[in-house]
Each structure stands twice: as structure tokens, then as C-alpha cells.
Image 1 (cartoon, rainbow, N blue to C red):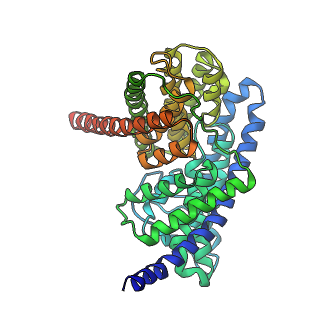
Image 2 (tube, rainbow, N blue to C red):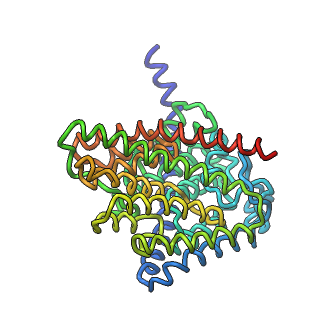
Image 3 (spheres, rainbow, N blue to C red):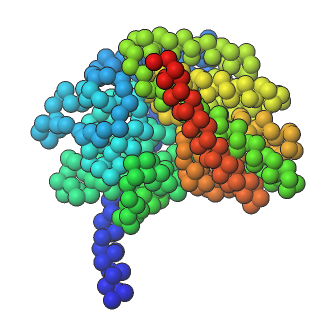
Length: 447
């Protein structure tokens, strides 16, 4: 009886694992190609004069708005209604490839992954080429947005496309899409379980039941994405590895509490601001004007507080600045807050990119504020803060834990980072609820 049940389970899970592997391979390769293009564009742009570091992000966001709103159609509102890719014929009409439905947010990449969870065959894969252009211009030209959500989006889109156009793979659309998303994230991070937990936690926002089949597709995708990273020796995202463990227990406890609270709170409030910015119904030109001017102003201020390079790109340059320049905790906190505001402004302006990497940078900078106070190394404070930023701001505590374990370092340092993730998750939840209650009270007051 036990053997029969095991055989039945393997029969059900096997096709999903195969779909996850195939979708993961194709999806991760597509995401890696886009990310490599972004990385090379950023590298070329970062060598230009300081004035260009201020102006190019505006150019990139403007191009993204022109692509998404000049070719795309509809209203720029955030929605949770599942949508499917509409097509006539095998490839669909040309109109389907650049026309957005009226209720879909064109720059919200994670939203589509969440909306399609449990019904991945409805994922609007036909819009991915247009979004890829917008992602390349936004992130590649230095706007303060990241590559993690774009990778997941492209990976899921590629898997769904593969299953939709090939009748032989029609029954595997869901595992193809799940594997594509998980593999794409793992290929960027170089850590297999990060992609798997990323897709799992996003699906939980729609309360999609986790079944052995879905788990197999997620794990298979994460594994193949890690394999792609290892095979091509990719270094697409720079993660800080803690090298020195805390020497004093109580210093570690103090650092855990304060880093978790500050990084979790800042990124959680930033996340709430980003949702507010995405939900605005103003005209694209108005949003671009206001958000673009704020982006330019904040970049100038960051250039004065730190360096112009610290304002450019997803946040890696800001971390390098923090690592190599002796500065005060106040300056570190100021740059963290300014970059949080800059990412929100980029979203308001209509930029198309992710916030995972910006949250890593904001958390890293916030964590380093307490390195001297508690006599812990800067890399440990930065690593703990980065993980806290993902747990508190993106609300992905399991993904953050997988990242901590995958990055490595001394055991005591890893335990410190894991504890910081727990504190940040709780702090982020409290901060987000407080912000929502305050917002509701203000709306009721001014009605």
C-alpha cells in the first residue's frame, strides 16, 4: 500500500518537476540575457561624466513611459484581477503584443506574477517584450530600481509562452511558468532556494495552496537556475558576505534588534509609499514630471551627502561607497532614506523595474549605521540589514532566510542575520499597519 501511494505521488509530481526544469532552463536564460544587457548598459553609463549620472536615469524612465504608454494602452492603475494573454491565431495579432488591457498596471512587474499565481496559464506573456524594453531603459540607464522582479516576470512569461504555443506542452504551462520564475531569480542570486521561496511567498499573497506538484516545480526551477549561474560563472548581483562573527553576545543582540527595527521599518514604509505611488490615477505625463523632478533633486542631494555614483543604479554603488569611505552613521542613514525616497519617486514617474535590489541597498546602509555602536564588522551589519530589508520591505522573510544561508559566513554571523530577519519582519508588519491606519484616518478626516 505504501509503495502504491509513493508511486502515485511520483506519477503526479514527476511531470511538474520536469516542467519546472524545462521552464527553468529556458526562462532563466531569457532573464540572464536581459540582466546581462542591463549590467553592460549600467557599466558603460557609470563611466560617464557626473552630469550624465544625474540625467540618464531621467532619460531611462522617460523612455520607459513612452514605451509603455505610447505603445501600450489603458489606465496606469494597480489591479489584483487575474488577466490572461489574449490572442487570435497561434501568434496573436500585432495589436495584442503592444496593447495593455485597461485594468493592468504596466510598470508593476510583481503584480502580474502574484495575480497569475495558481492560474499561470493566464499570465500576460504577450506583453513581456514591451516590458523588457521598458526594464532595459529604466534599470539600464541608472534609475534606482532593480532586476529581481524583472527576472521573475520574464521567467514566468517565458515559461507560459513555451507552454502556450506548443500543444505538446499545454498540460505543463503551470510548472513551466513556476520553474521559469524560480530559476530566473536563483540564476541572478546564485542561490537555489532563494528563487524557490520567492515564488512560494508571492503565491501566498493569493493564498494559493502549496501542493507537492507546485513545490516540485519551484524546487526544480530554483535548482536549474542555480546551475545556470554556476555553469556560466555569473555575477549579476553583488551580495555582502559577513566575514567576522560578533565577539560579544549582547552586542549581537543589540545589533539584531536595532538593525531589524530600523531596516524593517524604513523598507516597509518605502513599500507602502511605492504602493501608493503605483495606485495614483494621474496622467502619465504628470506623474513623469513630478516623479522625474523629485528623482533629479534627490540624486543631487545624494551626490552632496555621498557621491553622485551612490545615487546611480539599483544600489550597488551606494554599498561600495559605504564600504570604502569612513563616514558618520548620520550620513549612512541619510543616504538610506534618500535612496528610499528616490526609488519611490522612480515608481511615481513610471519606471519599470524591481525593488528587491533597492531594498537590499537600503537595508545594508541602514544596518551599517549601528556597526560602530555595537562593535560589529561593517559587512555583518550590512548583510543583516540587507536581509532585513527584504523581510520587512518586500515581506519575504523565508526568501531572506534562504539568502542568508546561501550567502554563507561564520555560523554566529548567520544566526545574527537570521534573528535580524525575524525582527525586521515583525517591525515591517507593525510599520505597514500603522501607515495604513494613519492613511485611513487622514482620508476620513478630509472627506
